Length: 111
Length: 112
Image 1 (cartoon, each protein chain N blue to C red):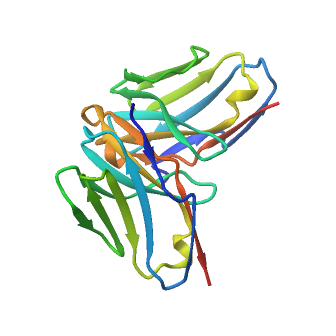
Image 2: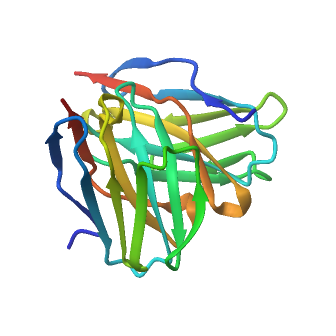
Image 3: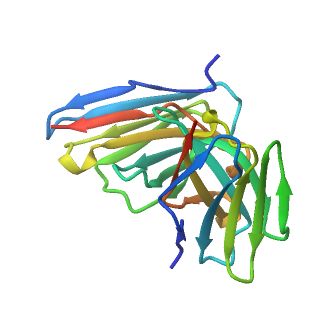
C-alpha cells in the first residue's frame, strides 16, 4: 500500500490552463504539505495543513490554492499556469515535521 | 536570513569506501536537523535526524555529526553501496516543528 500517493505522476499542459494535483495519505497523519522542486533539485515548502487548517503559506502566488477536504487529502489547484510553474511537486505528510513521508511527485510541464 | 547549503554538489566514491556529505547552515534556532535521500524519480526519503542538543547520532551504516560551533552538519555513510547513489539533502526544522527547510542537495555517485 502506498503511504502518500499523488496523481497524476506526469502533467503536461499549456500556459493559461487550470490544473489540479491530488494527494492522499493513508498513514493517519495530521499534517500534510506541498513542496516544489525546481530543475536544480531545490526543494521548497509551499503549504502546510494541520487537521485541514492552513498553518504555513510561503510566498506562493495566489494562483496556487490548496484544498483539504479532510485530513487524509490535500489537493493543489493551480490557475492560469505559467512556464515558470514547471517543476516537480511533492506532497508529504507527517505526525512530526522531521519525519515527513513524501509522495512520488508530480512532474508538471507547462508548454 | 535562513539558509541551508551544501559544500559539494557532486560526490563520487568507490563502492565499499566511506562517504561524507557536508552541509552548512545559518539558523541557530533550528530544533532538528535531518538528512533525506532522494533516488531518481522518487520522493525524498527520511534517513536520520539529530536534535540540536546532540553532537552525534548513529543509524544503520549512517552517522550524522552536528557541530554547532561552526554550524556544520555531516552525513557519513559506511561501506557505500551502489544503492546509496542518490541526491542527499540536509534540512532543518524550525517554527516549532512546522517548517522544514531543505538545503540544495548533493549528488552521490557510487562507482563500481
